[in-house]
Length: 323
Image (cartoon, rainbow, N blue to C red; front, side, top):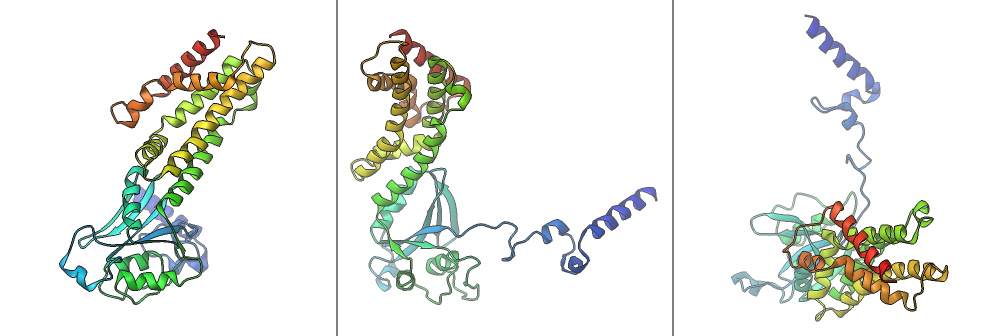
């Protein structure tokens, strides 16, 4: 009896915590705080509209029904770049809707497929104007629904004609898209890696270099940046701008930051140094060793923070002792 009384008291307290005017809206079994925290669109979280790269593509292999479709627009799927460097892929199949996260090296394959047809950048509509009453949900219908578009077309080409007529629709090419993606991801991460705490900046040159080396190593040996570097290398012949982007927004800022520390120390009379940039390149090489290559070809495990710290300290020690 006592246990039942306590349970009833808790239930009464929960009901009392819900505003009186909203109690009738709460569905039984749903926590009141969830029911009353939805936004104006009926969602538990408010997410700003995102841009999607919608790819209208020819088939990869001949199918009997291809004769009834536009030559270049037999299928449609959508990709969205993420801040981490990965891509979200939404591809309707005959048998399922594939939604997955791809590393850049895999996303490039889908983008190259997209380049065989047309790639269009479009912003999704929130809350959207789509509906679920169309019945036959093929690839064109599902991508239109993903974008929140009001549409009564059933073929990829018809959807393409509808979407490209919208204000704000932009055609994309693979290299420009990848360069933009690489630049955003690398700039954001390099700024964080190269920003030293004010307390660190007042320490000895060895400590400053070690902290900087540790930050740079942690970044360039992370799975996300390894994947970007690997992609830049394997796609360098097809998309040279991507390799150049990695060089300009990852390698050069790191070397420049190290060289600036060495140059300041030399100007302060700590040691003589004619070419800080050359020593900075040497330090980068010592930091990476062969592990960086091993990570890119997939034969090494990710280094631990202790591994990173040891490599940073050892590389800095070698450079400073050589002066």
